[in-house]
Amino acid sequence: MKKWLIGLALVTAGVVLTACGNKQTNADDSWEKVKDKQELTVVTSGTLFPSSYYDDENKLVGYDVDVAKAVAKKLDLKIKFKEYNVDGQVAAVNRGEADFAANDFGLSKERSKKFALSSPIKHSFDSMIVRKSDNSGIHAMKDLKGKKAAGEPNTSYMKIAEKYGAKAVTYDNATNDQYLTDVAKGRTDVILNDYYLQKMSVAALPDIPVKILEDVYFNANFTGFLFDKKNQALKEKVNQALASLKKDGTLKKLSEQYFGTDVSVKPKQEITEKVSAE
Image (cartoon, rainbow, N blue to C red; front, side, top):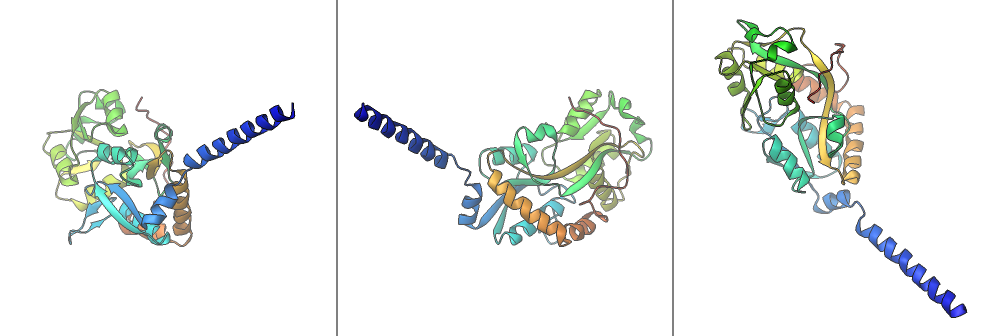
């Protein structure tokens, strides 16, 4: 009996040790990997003004880009950027080719099912760009029916446009001037996107006769960085850095530099209309 009990004890110990071993194997070492290589790899577009774009000196800059740089500095890391369209950024995060994506990504409940999400770095709401001459015939969401909506494929904005009956005209990582020129010339009719991004784009290209459709605002939202779902340790380190950047005023400074207002806090506008892409 004693021999049987000893054997049982050894088997039980073996199970415990095996379980512990498995736990160690499956442990989240995402932060340790980044710390060991001393570098963050971040995916972005390089074409989304003013979040990620090239300035007159051909330098990659923008709100999301500069916040990511500030995070790396806080964590005492170097930073390397790779550029893809939205689908490419998402795929790179999923494949482990990037530590996170920084390109004005909405931190929606739907997205949280597939990715780990950072703390918000920008608060905003959605709007539409239309032709200045005739509003592209749009005065409300229902008027999207039959219109040509421009954007990247598989984004929530394009899904909303299609839900309301618009025809999708898709682009692959196109620049803002191409988007706006196509609306102005009637090749497309409307662009659904973030209000602050649209405000800055229209202001930066004043010779293109387009505008933001007034008082048709919807979907109060916030944006941030996307991580692989399993990389919680890395996400928490980045969130700690973001909290420090908010406290020391860096986020406010960068917000005002790129948007002319502090987008790191909720806007004064009260946006009550919610529009689902489903």
